[in-house]
Image (tube, rainbow, N blue to C red; front, side, top):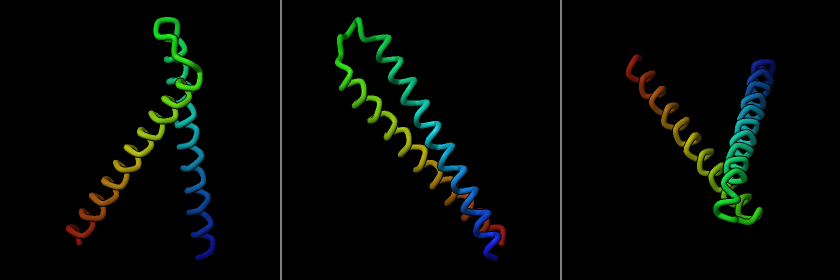
Length: 82
């Protein structure tokens, strides 16, 4: 049983690392997009960072809520199948 638990925790760790990588990529893309638009709007670097963090957090929350919804739907299907 301990083997199963350690396997689950390593898989959980892999998923967390993947999520962090995706968040960093999203932040980098947002940052590059704002840097590309900067000559037009003249926004400071600080506000780039704030906006990039805000959008990243919002996307992360939405993905997390979607995953919870998917998990609940899967559990409901299991109950119906039984």
